[in-house]
Length: 179
Image 1 (cartoon, rainbow, N blue to C red):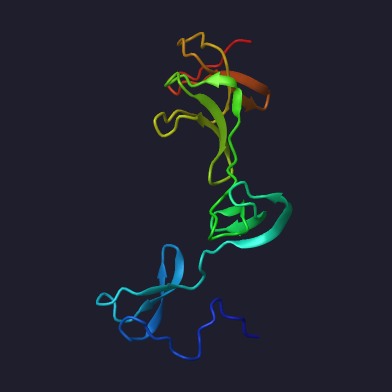
Image 2 (cartoon, rainbow, N blue to C red):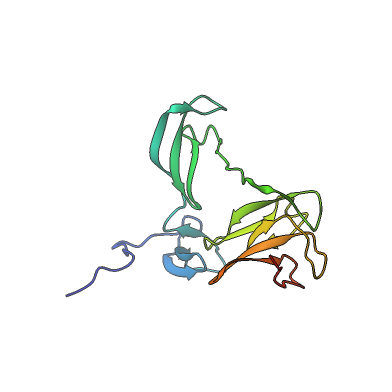
């Protein structure tokens, strides 16, 4: 029983449009691609899977604020998003705003608010909304308060087997707070 190949290799040879040499399958950090066999004299490459967005669902009842065309749920290179169906003429994309967490100000810059964010691995963390000017991050939910041991002006809720414990949000201290 033979298995289907991962990538279909064309029966006919593809030719480089720049130098007329044969295109060959190559592998890079973003996956396989076709590259010119005359490399490095010719640096032509061609993606096997172009990263174009595809329309999943048309939102006919919601017009684009920029051009009036209907908005659409799309699946793109970085996941699902809502954008104008009139792309490329209109580049409108709906951006989600991260909500401020319980009106807790950043203890590092004292200008921004801490907002809930999600890492590329799906884990929740809290960071200053003034990023990249301020790079304060916290892995646990922030709570307004002052550490009794070091005087740092922010506490964090750390879930444990015995329940939620308050700890100092400073990476230098992190001693448990008496409740």
